[in-house]
Structures are given as C-alpha cells and as structure tokens.
Length: 253
Length: 159
Image 1 (cartoon, rainbow over the protein chains, first blue to last red):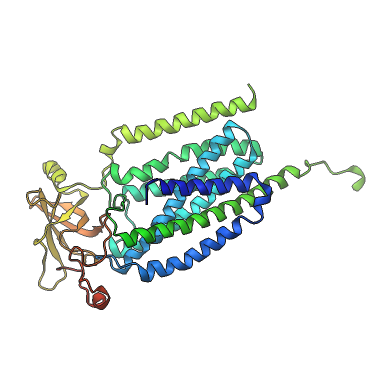
Image 2 (cartoon, rainbow over the protein chains, first blue to last red):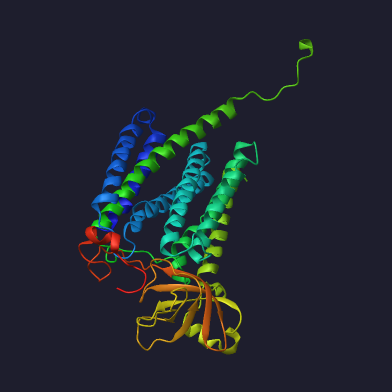
C-alpha cells in the first residue's frame, strides 16, 4: 500500500463530513451505508484479528489487541486534528457550524482516546507486567485527554454562544500542542512504550488486519462525528430560538 | 475593530503561543531534565551519586546472565545498554516474579536502587516490548507449528 493511502482515506472521511454539513439532502442517508459498512467490517475484524491472523511470536494471542488499540488512538488523533481545524476555521470566519463540528470532534476524540488507553492498559498488564507506569507516552497521552476533557468542560462555562465558541476555539488550539508531544514522546525520551512500528517491523498479515481495523474505525469515526454534530446543531438552534427572559406580566398575577 | 478581525487576531495569537510552547518542549533542554529511566552507561557515569536513590534503569537482558535462586523465587541478571557484547552493563537482583514476557535479550525497565556493591536491587520489573510484531517461527520464539504447541509454550526463561 503506498504511503498516501491513509491520508487519502482520512481526506475522504473529512470530505464526507463536509458533505454532511453542507448538503442537507445527504444528511438523511449517507451515514447509513457507512454505518453498515463499519458494522460488517467490525464482524469481519473479529474473525480476521482473532482467528485469521497468526499470534505474535512472544506475546502469543495477547498481541492481537494491537488491531484495536492502535486504531482507537489513531482515531482520537484524527478527531482532535479535525477539532483544531474547525477551531481555526471558526476564528477566521465566524460560523456556528464549525463550532458545532469542533465540539462533536472533541467529544468523539475523547471517547476513542479513552477506549484506546484502556485497551493499552489491558495490554500492558500481561506484556510489561504492570497496568500503568508514568512513562513519557502514557503521561503525554493522559495530559492530552485531560486537555480535551477540560475543553469540553470549558464549553459549559458560559451561556453566550459566541463567547463559548471563541474561548473554546482558543482552548482547542492550545490543546492541540499535546498531539505532536504524544506522537514524538517515544522518540524524544526513553520510554517503556515502544516506538512507532512500520510495515517493515510488522509481519504482512498483521499489517493487513491492522489496516482493516483502522478502516473499520474510520467508518465509526464518521458516523459518531456526524451524529454528535446533529445533536450539537439542534442544541444551538434551540438555544438561539429561545425567547429572551421576560419579567412576569402584571396581569398574570 | 470588528468582531471578525478581533477573532482573527485571537487565532494568530493562540497559534503563536501553541507553536512557542511546542518548540520549547521539542527543542529546549526539557528532554535532559525529564528522564524516565537511565541506561546502564548513564547510571554508571553518575558515579557515587547514583547510589541509594530510587531510580529506573532500562536496557536489554544480557543473554546467558539470568540466574534463578534454587527455590526459583528470586533472580539476578545483567542489563546492558544494547545488544552489543561490549555494551556497558549493570547486575540486577530482583525479588519479584518477572512478567511472562521476560526472557534473555528482551528490553526491561527496573525500578529500585543501585548500591556500592554494584548490584541494582529492584522490586518492580517491567518488560519493554519492541515495535516488532512477528508470526512464530521466524526468530525462534515459539515453534512454527504454534497451534499445537501454544499450551505448552514456555516463555519464562529459556528458548
């Protein structure tokens, strides 16, 4: 597989998200075939990952968690990248559409990141011998997730949609600093977590299943983000259509 | 100033702050002050200062150096910087049962303290997996007919 394929796939997902946001006629149906594809690929992933792929030579069956742990964290990084893109877009051209998309991407990213870290901890117990240790990769990932949990908390600090969007866009840009640190933490510092693998360090059938898992979760990333975006949009419209608070009318008493 | 141009200014400001923070972490000397573990050569270079403090030591288990106590409850082994035979190494004595993945040649991180008798005593032994994922049979981990031998596979000490 040429190196540009993963980026092309992510670009496709972003294009589908933009289509969902911009084209009302797409909203009703596009998520359905993608959700169906994701569900089918997930069932196939169980077979491919648990039966078809060989066990790892030293970790045996434990190593199979690779096929879900790594894609989950990848999805978190992609979601946070979409989040920062939306945040910059909001500041450049005020639009509550990008603000709603940023909120949904951050929340979905926290979900994928938290699941990925939990899976990593489950993997660490039998391989490293501990559930957790404060190594640079684990510290930086924790900081990243806490930054985005803080971002989501910040959004509920104010009732004013414009201030919320502006403040949280700044918080999104600052939180994004944690991403390159997570990525390079295993190279910048001595760590317990291994450095990134590449197709040359992973046997071919395992690479194929890992990619299958990544595409499966890309489908779910799309569905989760657009569904969460719909919720964020309807909350925004509901908040904006709300009549201003009035003093009780004298004759009502 | 309109709200839009103010927002653009905020965006540029936030990106500048974020970029500055990132480059400070990436290119500043923060990496020298944050150390998760020492390699044997780094610990030995500290001289007397390394004695007594609780630190982490990381490296690879020297093949042929693993020695279990007669009751198989504690063990000693050498941890070296690299797989090179001449790499600096430190003797480690562990009172804890190592994880199943532990074997000769694998990466380990041990937490404990170094004493003037040149032995590093540890009560927390972690195994560091490399970024290589291979099917059985290629490097002599498990026999190639893995399906029949999984139940008997002994991954603790010897190959």
